[in-house]
Image (cartoon, rainbow, N blue to C red; front, top):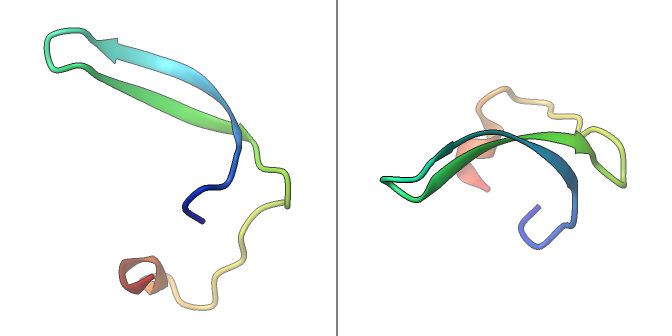
Length: 43
């Protein structure tokens, strides 16, 4: 959810567009289980 603190690793950095891609390596409350695959679109 928004505001949760997670551990992540940086995959790549785009200096021109000031963007970075990260991979979440640790989520403190475990993985989220979703009933509906598209449910994240409406949160």
